[in-house]
Length: 393
Ligand code: FAD
Image (cartoon, rainbow, N blue to C red):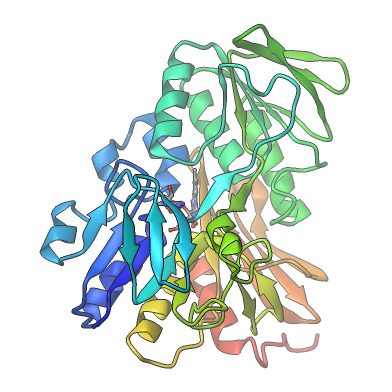
């Protein structure tokens, strides 16, 4: 069997290598990653790894010996810099080249930055990797306050952990409610209240004028003139797909590497999986790019099946979660495009769910401390989406 090379040793890359071996692939298998660690899970980074409840070894996706036992050649600290599709070779930053039969891009995303005045000061950070969190934890230990720009999942999770460490925490959000891109008003309202009740200074509809300080950050100046003092500033305004290798080698890219339902790119010898991809969802009738563990795992499994010669058309019910304090938000489906919501249960009891409908069809459910509704929603959306209309009232 011809050699398979995977670029990116994260959630999707590690899963793909595992699934290929599980499925009987016996050829050479290389997993190149530019980080120094064994492949690891990122969700705890902004949760239990930041709080110190889980150490680095608690993040490893497989025991380090797994790769050797399964003859997966994991090469850490190694960055791929270009792809020569005609010669079927990958060029590495260290000057080496690797030949491939099939190549898989599993390069994930980069944290988005903002072109803010002062964003280059010491103490201004983003969060994507173990190294980032180690720096944030160090910074937090010597700071009394942190300012977080962006009230998305990662910003709010870090806010919760920093608050529990006794820090003063401000979260500054340009939109009129947190997590606006992904949840309804009811869910945003719940989390606004939760964070404010915990003592977070959550500023909505607020822009940033500049980041203050000399070399080291001392605070954030807001568009309304207020200055929030903070020795650490986290920019948490989303992520961008790491698709430049693909673009530079002429693969079709559109805010993500374009792949079909088998994970194949516009070059039949190159696949892509995980956060770096965009694909067409028949279920949701639009192209989607997902940033979730579910997608990284399931799309990698599908691509492995295809590489092993099976016909596969990946079209998942997406799901996701976020932990903030002792509250678990679980999301099933994609709510974008909803025209109706139904709230069941009581936000005041910290246990409720919100069903999202489009033309009476159930497209998504957000569950707050309600795992049973989440599991049920995944099944219902999966089984009934074609005819999944609610009965008329
Ligand atoms: P990644 O895991 O990012 O792996 C990509 C790897 O490729 C990285 O190690 C990168 O350094 C490497 N790489 C990139 N370019 C190159 C190159 N040229 N050469 C070599 N290596 C390269 N999802 C959830 O479902 N629930 C959550 O609660 C949740 N919380 C999260 C919290 C945080 C702080 C973060 C950052 C993400 C979270 N996610 C969560 C998202 C989830 O972690 C991602 O969807 C998942 O990791 C995607 O897997 P991936 O393999 O596509 O990318």
